Length: 623
Image (tube, rainbow, N blue to C red):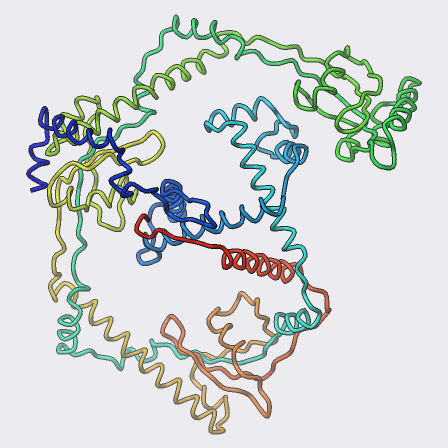
């Protein structure tokens, strides 16, 4: 019935249905359909609400990060949506618990500390100095407000303050340090013989009956992959922008309207000397000291030498007080008022700033300059295209979504309406593909019930910012049973490998029995590949990691060597003779990694304690 409705839901009929549906939405809101008239919450933590929309955003971000980590090809079985849901809600709950603790405990970050942190971020610096214009430009390009970004930074710094306070107070006992060093720096001396499956290759001959039996039992393993090819319409903002014409007159008019935006601000090459004001030195004393230095410079002593000897701003003092090229707004109003009033080569009087008391030398001045239209023409054309493209893209993507739904059995009408050609993909499966099929959302849509079996167009799929696609299945190849003749050799190799590995294990266990009964090592392992490892540490990178880990789990030798063995991932078997264990040296000084690990454990324990005492309610039906 639902399919019949969709088949008829086109043209006027579709708009009638939408109108009828919109009436209850207008009266009660769409949320009432999902919330039963109540709040649509994902969780509550001590009465604080976590809305479903916040959870959904966190869930999608987790999914996107995972896709990026694996380039859109998440290994099958590694993680599923249920696991991601639990991770997302658990992360939000923990974040809420932590925020409540920070608020109740009065953690705060002052404006000076926040400003200092932002100014030290390299992404906002030009030539090693904070660039206010760059700061504004980068935030605007990401559509982030200054207030929002600075609040995020403040929240992050508060959390770091809390975390570091716990981690830096973690204590590692001297006995723990000694035990750690004794084990971490321990070395072991051993011999090992490797029995390889290839030694038994001539002895294995799988029978036809065994091959047939294996094929019959494992038929589901010998099928072709299900595959599809799709036709699709991809709409990109960049493509829309490229097709938008911009005349010279339009660009010139925009230049005249935005002329102030294309003016380079005045900049100055400055040096400074800083005398700090603190608990031991008041402002008047700092002023007096600055005047003494000012007199030295006026008497002929080089400014850079005085700065190196006397400036209390260690970073610039090493460079003779060199601040590089500075624009207004970078170093504070009090500094700007004096620095931008100096003539080239002029030395200022002492001035009180947020850094203390400063002497400023203006070495050179680069005046403000209006960039000409030819200089910025290409940038203006790009900006105008981008502005218009964003508007057109929204209209076109809405039109694409509407027409591909209203005409669900082809893409031609939608393609004509948005002016984009229909493309065709290569074959791809449910788990991997090339081109647009690298995106998991594309594969999920292509193999959905509505698109694959009902032969409808997909919904609008977002591939990235400003990039959407609608697709429909062009061809479908269902999984097919591969005949025995096609997989005969493969099965024969599987059975041969299994037989060889069984022989390897039996041979290894037989050798171990002989060694444990008292027979000599050299006699028992004669004919095998034998190697010696002397004073090997846990961190050795030359040995097989599974073998190394196994050796360090073996019991210590007492009256004589200890023997054991293990199967290796490549099917080989290792017979080991452990002859010596040497405990590591114990300095008693905890390594940085140990203190860090202890701090991490302490921090995690505090978070878990906060979570355990919190009143938490998860609305699983809404997830």
